[in-house]
Amino acid sequence: MARGSTLRRPARRWRQLDAASRWIFPCATLIFGLFIIGMPFGLPGQAALRPIYALACVYFWSLYRPASMPAPLVALCGLLLDLLGLSPFGVWAVLLLLLQWVTLLLRRKLVPARFLLVWAAFTALASASATLAWVASSAINLTWLPTTPLVFQWLLAAGLYPGLAALLIKAHRGPAAVELA
Image 1 (cartoon, one colour):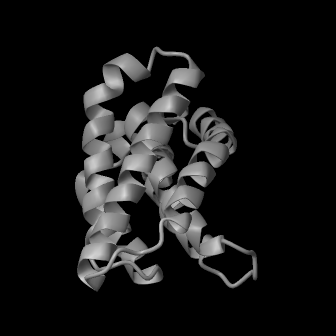
Image 2 (tube, rainbow, N blue to C red; image 1 turned 180 degrees about the vertical axis):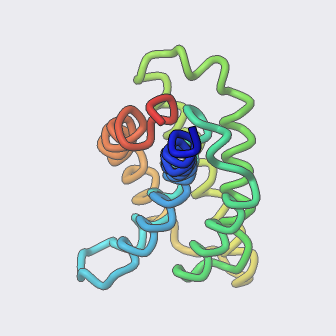
């Protein structure tokens, strides 16, 4: 009898560890992706990928797994994005929290919707976030910054989301699937 109970304990611990790792997966992909994109690969426009990747991750995981993206972790990821980029400290933390809040408000309508509507909503929210970041940076610099990078970021967000969403959907249904734990 004592032997059976000792065999169940490690199995239960492994199951708990598996469930915890699946729960932490969304934030881990966000943080890991920010560091990978921050590496000097010499790609043109590479710095513009960081906020788009962060926006896409926060939007996707807040939409399909909101419990795995708690607001304090989203704020910390925003501060990390500020530290890795050249934006004023705290801007992306606030913007990612706003994105998460709006996504959670729209969640009931977007989860059962077709991908085209989810993509359009992301494009609109990412464009609004990029515009607010541009306004904040312009206000801090006390001058209007050029709008070309802003438009480039809008187009990049609209163009990259389908590919990022495909990868995140695979992860959501595979290694990050909480129901498989």
